Length: 414
Ligand code: PMP
Image (cartoon, rainbow, N blue to C red; front, top):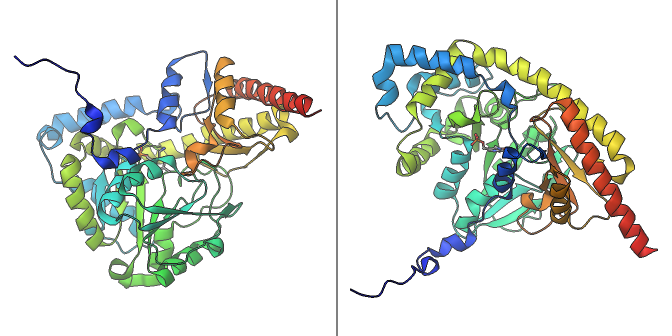
């Protein structure tokens, strides 16, 4: 028998794994299991808002009446009654969609993965908001695109400032309550983004998990709706928006059900890519989402979530004013799950996190939302997971830490 040696996995991993990064946020999510830590890190719904009882009832209905469909293999495109309900939702908002425009996916994260697989060649230019959602960077980095960060202001991405010299393939936008900043793209800039895509012949990936979670201000149309209003019956042939939606924030992320809405030609290719990834999304999960829509659980859940999270958003804004005050600046989002805070003079929010963990408070350092190491003066704070009293306590811990740090810098400089 030959000598047994340790397997050198690194010599076997494909070259593209050099570009696969782990998510700092998913590592931080593990902290949520430690009760002493007040975590503002995850982008997660409130545990108490998950519709456990309603899901149990839906499961019973499904398994009593339609168990074979639920438990057997199904088509890659998804469970048709759910696809039809999603079509209806967008038709009511003016998109002339049919079932061929909808692919059910295993969470909108899978949509980002399918976009990478089917659209991104090495060195393709991908325009992103700056900062942007880490999960998209992680999904696309292995395809070695050339990311072009476009600046943002309080009204979202400033496309006039895009330093675009050659052709670009994709523009990735989170128009509603962006992750990580909570900023929304203004109504005036939405049609301009569609015109930009037409002018530069690029595609827009519209990632829209938070649109229903609006606590103040007026609802704005999704980019795909703005595009449909411009193109009318030409939308399927001339549309350039790939729209991603999900039930993760309005029902439950554990279901892992989302959708892609796009031109039928693109949907066919995404379906082919999905087939190789997982054959299809869990039919039981799709049927639960379908049932909860039909039984109006979704319609009831959304206003309840808005009330719950509005209170928490107000609590974090108040706590920041009290405990951080002039030592930082932060966004005041109309919805979503996040506030983005910038600390003047700070250069190491990962280091601030390490100190925060000693004081039992966690957040995501800003560099997780850039591909090039920027963001070390900023951090992302989630406000949906904790009740107001816990938010106040956690922000007080963070505030005293920031004060200690800023004061010690001043002492060193003196
Ligand atoms: N896109 C954005 C902007 C997100 O914030 C998230 C979840 N944090 C996702 C996509 C992925 O969500 P899911 O796969 O659960 O639908």
